[in-house]
View 1 (cartoon, rainbow, N blue to C red):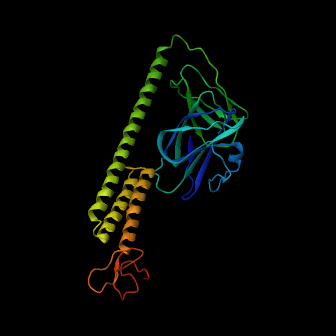
View 2: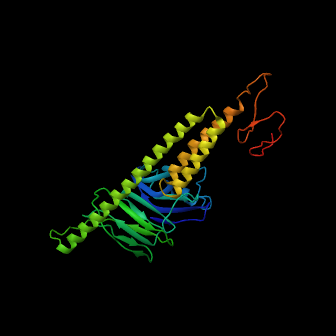
View 3: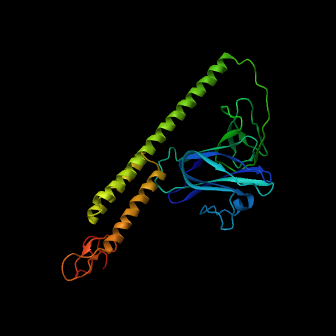
Length: 316
């Protein structure tokens, strides 16, 4: 599925409708090349979704929800559907400005049981299903439909959609007998597609592994920096802010993704907050018993007669 990138600070919503029976449960995997959120909701909750803020109403009861998920092959599973009817996969992407997108769109993957019947809002649908069965999509209005390659998967289907004008599309699955003899040219074509797909999956796995390794290494570096400089609060703050600047550069160069950056930023912010709170309680050394004065904004030490912080200009 591809979702066009919204303007900075805004969000995009993509809803994929399907029909389900009472007490039925479904599960599968999903993911994207940036941080996304997935909800599975009823038709009424989807209609009440605020398309401007991309937020569900407080009265909504999602059958599944997972927010700000990074990477692929994330599992999902619903609670039993309360009644027969139409339900929605709802993907939400928020453009925070950190993600590095190719061609200004987000690529989303979704797997689901092959028995599931879709009623999709997209006009172009590409389906990848088991090599021993086909899933013809019957359009309920004028829609452009195309089928690409196939992979072996006896229990689930993977669907890739391009967001366009809404038009309901019903999906059905029928078993077709496979040919016992495949032409040599077709066999080479299938093998070539399989090799390319396997190479791509290996490349993605190695790329994700490098990012996870970089994240783990940098989290350790943040902890060790705080422990090393904790005695000197001002120097410790300087070192942590430098690490934050380095993390921003790593994000820009694609060494980490948006979700990893948010984890690093949160870790550094916790330590900076701890430095400010601890510094504000630290007594001033020397005689007289006076308490040391510190800037509530940056933590710099203030002389007793100073009204403004010399470092950041904050009023005492």
